[in-house]
Structure formats: structure tokens, C-alpha cells
Length: 177
Image 1 (cartoon, rainbow, N blue to C red):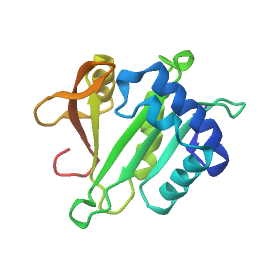
Image 2 (cartoon, one colour):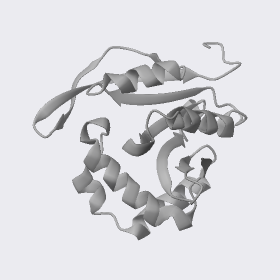
Image 3 (cartoon, rainbow, N blue to C red):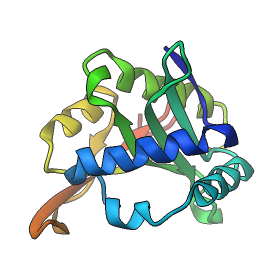
Image 4 (tube, rainbow, N blue to C red):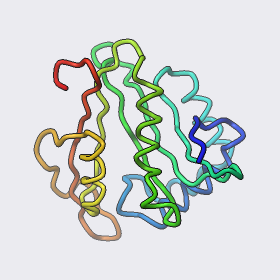
């Protein structure tokens, strides 16, 4: 398995996997298939371009030896001067055929290796939807802890309310770690 930041040449493959992820696991993401499917490959290219301009903001991909994208995780550094110590993990997905192989854990590790030396970055934050408690357990094993109260009825997906939980991971050498 190869782990690397996505490049512009990966935009079409990323779009395909992103749409598949939203269709296959609608309760795992705050974005919807309907909204994302309206975006063109060019718009996915624009997103990758934008991500490339902000240090600490990128999408890490997991590729087979044949360069097939089977998983991804995205992170965005907060650009506000009062919040430069934070980054947000936005999306994470591994295709069903490649789950339970440690790829998600490796994505998080590769992402963290990429950002650990960014000056002033101390925390990674995320929202996890509670429709899948395995996701909470996964993030806890990766070192994230719940922070604050549960957000009841955070989203409404297919007519069903879904609660959310805010989590944080304090990076090495941070006072809270």
C-alpha cells in the first residue's frame, strides 16, 4: 500500500471514490451524495489546488500497488490567527474491500507524520457522527478523546436524526497530551 498526498492527476479518481463513499456510507459524512455529485472533476481539481496552497491542508490517499485509490483522509489547518494551533480532520474513508486491514490507522499515522513538524500545530479536531460507533472506537484507538457534550440531532439524513460528537487529539509535546 502506498500513502501519499493527492495530486491534481488524482482528481478524477478521488471524485469517484468520494462519491462512492457518500453513497455507500451516507451516515458517516455530513456532506451528501446529492450535493457532491454536482461538482465536476474540475471543481475537485480546484479543491486539491486550494489545499496545496495552505500548509497543513491536504488529502492523504491510500493507493494499491497499481495506483488505485482505496482510501483517503483530509485535514485542513485553521488559518485564523487565534486558532493556528488547530487542524480539522474533515473526511476519512476506506473502501469496504480494504477495511480491517489497518489502512485507516496507516492513513492517520501518515497524516500525523506529515503534520507533526508544522510550527505551532498542537491539535487535530474532528466531528464524528454517532450512527456508527465503530468510528468512535477507531478514533479513540488513534488517540482522539471526546471533548464536550454530545450534539443531539446534529444532522438529518434520509429523515433520520443523527447525533455527533466532537473529538480532539493533542499532538506530542503539547501541554494537554
